[in-house]
Image (cartoon, rainbow, N blue to C red; front, top):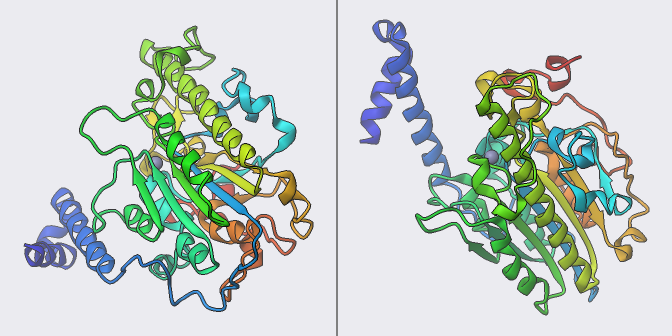
Length: 382
Ligand SMILES: [Zn+2]
């Protein structure tokens, strides 16, 4: 079967009769890409450690440390109160802004979960995507002496057809909630396990929370009690569909504010040296600049890349981080996040690149690559 697709795929790319047949060519090329990708996965075992990370400094002291990476879904910062949206969609986070570093200009490298997170969570980036097979963030933390956890409210798919599910296998423990064919649970479903893990008698923990966030269908992401925005939103698109959609998206953001706040609250209670980074896999267009809601690279808009990047540090951690710089105006793409997370947890390894950590003194603003190798800053220049 695979060979048939590859045969036709190759034919479609090089033979003139099919060159003019756009649709089948794209379709077949899609299959070829897909099976190429699968054959590449088969070479990756998503083990607990990667030989590619060398000279990883192992933390063997007895100080309790907890680092949490919260990955939201389809959340555009432009709709968040803490990013000056006109609606109060983040009242809880707004009540504690003095505790947060709210980075103002961070983007995702892509507008879809898979191409974005395979960079965010690995050494791979737009310059060298092949490095995604070499090492991921969980392996790095494992090698540094951490216990690693992956708690997800996203639907798990087979290890061979979803690179992100594959990465989650590098965690010491992974828990998936969204596994039945019934309705996706609300994100609060992860909080109990999260609390249990926080209380485990383990000194060093790295926990990834992969949420459903504000993924469409927006109205299914929050309970009725979070249906706060029902009036006419400010928008140049005033169809009944756009009004309903914007309102439900804003309500989904309001619910996410509640989830993020509760995650923070649980971490505060354990009173560890701790840090939490909240991001989204990519943004979302919700009738912001075009008459459309969703995310697609073919009509990529700024809102599809503009993500929140919110950092919280415990008091015990702040005193220890004088070597880092918390400049919320730095422009960053999360495709280099592995270096920032390493800095945050004071991890050392041979491949560490200080210029790619947004917290490092040697950080350098570089070209933020998006689709077709465009520069985000050039493409969306005002
Ligand atoms: Zn996504």
